[in-house]
Image (cartoon, rainbow, N blue to C red; front, side, top):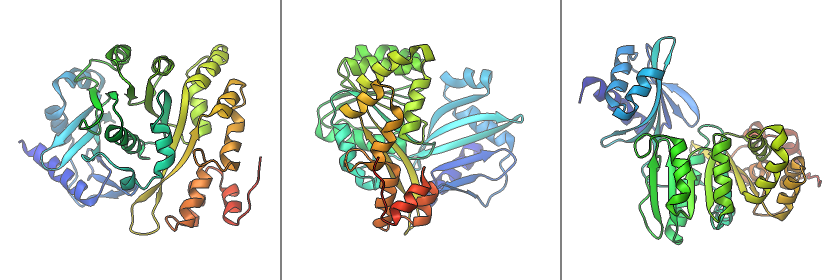
Length: 362
């Protein structure tokens, strides 16, 4: 092990022991840890550009070396013995090397570990087909929630599950289900090739790491229409934003067709935010969940997407609920403060009324 790698491993060990989710390295400055969503500088000497460069050159897999040399940015997975696995993004800024590492926890999470409500997630996980999208900002726990759902399926249902990831985050051990986990660059040259091949691999469930473009979404639609359940993630804050993002994959002249395809294939949305916990530090998840039942599908088909948020806000269905309803639940359970609930709410004025016991029907 070179001195550069040893120094990075010591830093990663400290990050894991501190409970950091991310490690941010900018050449010429000390490292930063992200702890409970907040950046904290590490008490250490600045990391030289040569040290950052040496670490990437030594650890980037050979299949990605040309990508790093040609494009100046690269994603890969790094395993530190006795410490854990990390998702790495290395890139150039102002001619210097920067590296962001995210700790990938080895243990596949249970619902209890995450503090999420299991029942509405299980209602979606038990589906036989359709597209299920887990949405939120970077660092909102999307991958962990999705992993917990797949972990439950693994323990309770016999399914053939094919995952397409960049890189693999959680490693599953076959139980009642059989997993095939394909990492872009190592197991298959490109995301596009993996997507094209997946329907020939006889899956029951397909995990697509990120819903990134029209081609990916159309493959997901084809899979859903032929009896597969598709899990994927998307960067969108709310159900309303998530629906908008789906339609943005299509040019305006194709929106009528898109409405039919989305209404026919959508199983649901799980949108997530992490809120500072009231006690003990850390963060707790708040969710907005849409189960795409016949009412929702008809609204999408008729082009009335704007009415769906009203259903989430006003309804009493345990399978679908808005962020405000979940934030109210967390406040009443003394999990988060009222101030944080209002700060993270997409509609703080309505939540303030809800906290006073005032609700409006739509």
